[in-house]
Image 1 (cartoon, one colour):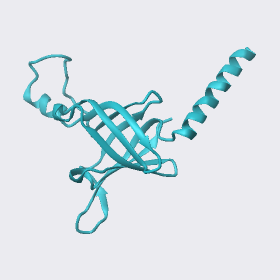
Image 2 (cartoon, one colour; image 1 turned 60 degrees about the vertical axis):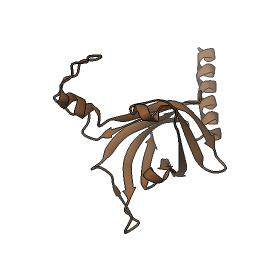
Image 3 (cartoon, helix red, strand yellow; image 1 turned 30 degrees about the vertical axis):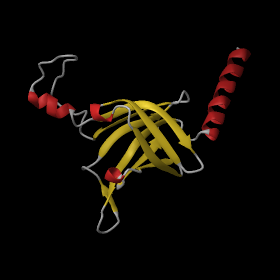
Length: 160
């Protein structure tokens, strides 16, 4: 029993140390996704609210999944791996945006780079997305650096 308690304690210490060294690690839940107004410079909620998750693993892999807040609430029934989906279903599933891949972090510049190994948009496979990041208390703030998406800001909270 003492051995089990010691192992659990050491494991929790290891996770705390990993988090202290690499605070971006873990599962993050999207609190708000905002777009900067080009005229006023103020941020407003983008697309009536989004939800999703961003995961950074100790292994160097990451995953992102974003969707409208209402996305899980549908009466549509989907069958997996079928080529006969009605147009209504096809349009519905295109609302969800996701990719996974490898990531690297430059803490000196507050930059995280995502190498997209797969993506819901086949045109983005293999691309590298560069994101600036900062922390506001327990909130991770991510901003795309490329011009076409530079006005977006994602605020994420740590999923416990």
